[in-house]
Length: 274
Image 1 (cartoon, rainbow, N blue to C red):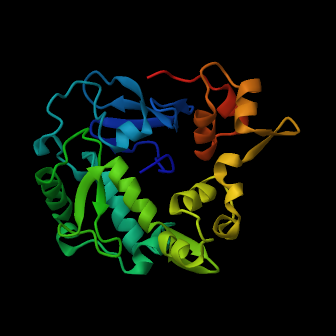
Image 2 (cartoon, helix red, strand yellow):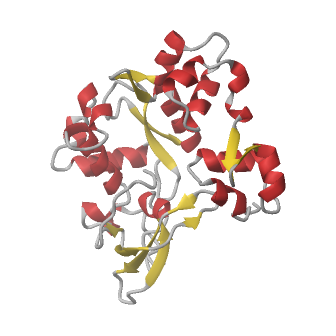
Image 3 (cartoon, rainbow, N blue to C red):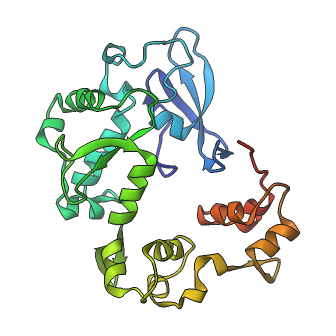
């Protein structure tokens, strides 16, 4: 779950209750990250500012007052468990027709198995997750091996973000001429000869139309893109050299723009050394 998660005041993560959303900050990998002020419900009532991704992934669930957060006994209610928000969202996109993602899941026949839906279904899911590699703060993500199959023990696994993103790219669904189609299948049928799948995805990520991404000659590949800044067109390396902050490289600049940063943000935000 990314930066598009909707959180309301009072939402609970472990012992932390959301108070309000704060300003966006730069994460440890250069991504803009939503942050929230939260209050621990322990006796100290400590206030913290935490990145959204650390809340939804279960990295931060208290002010530090609880040391054994990975025990099931720590969560007297399902809503306090770090897996609960993602599990509820999973059910919503499979069964709620008003959910924005329903057309990619429920309408395609994807469902959550009965074992994970019944009254004790969430706790069965937690137990299965712990038996299959998930631990608090492990940075693993739930992946369906068969993209057309259900959320079930036989079709799901916990994998790293890198593996999950690779699978998503291969099975990504896009709308083309009024129909939903798997991105890789569209590329196989319609792409210009010699255009790689990675180049096709790269074009889509920087805002090309589907038709242009499929059909434009290879000399118009993403790395040749020009950028309009202060009324003039620049190549990426020229723009970085003239206006970029110290340590900024053309590759970092392009990656920032591809993630949705404005050109000014991408040029002027300090590069964090790892």
